[in-house]
Image 1 (cartoon, rainbow, N blue to C red):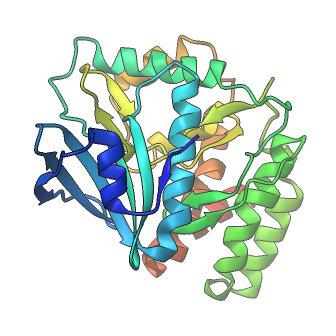
Image 2: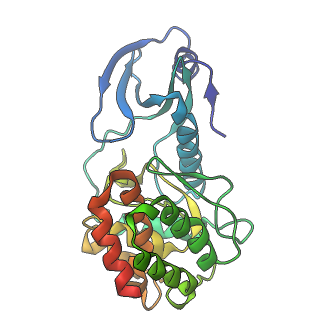
Length: 293
């Protein structure tokens, strides 16, 4: 349950207590969608705030619910979720501030083990693929309708919506290739033994070093799916340490042939980047499309 407040002041009073006030507000840089700030309260409490226009209220709610779902697995760290609300024409999300202490020994091995624990512990209650609500991948909507099949879910809720948004980028020959890929997707992807909770947007920018020196997750786009989709995303923009991949594989969640499926999982994210940021991602999309068709 995410606490929702009707004003910024009421949120601060509830979180820090009556009489406590904002002593310092400093911008935090690094994101490309929201404004972010480090808030220091009069009693020394430090908070992290994201802020955007009022239209982003549902984005923040989806983010908080995703962090809550990850936290509820008890497997891996996320920042404390303190509340959200509206102030005039702005919306905000308040989280506990993460100082980023020095990394613990075996940082990557520990992160791999805890991510695997999340994938194992976060089991869909209805045995289906999707999530209880739609959410966002970046600023684009992400469809999470329930499906009994992983392949069907990935076709209908991942690739197809992004292709619809990006249709003007493709020639008639490209569209025929996409039609072929979608209609034969079960030749490439495999059904997992069970749906697992995924972060959904797992690249290096969406993990941080937590206050305990271990890897924590931020900015999720959660849903229940195949764990391989999370691992594939980690390899798309530079990758993690080789120690992470070795430790994750030891947990037995990677199935034979993963490397043959990896680019199909990442086709979703490349299409999303094409829709968000423009034609610079088109060549990567076409390269993957031609490889499989």
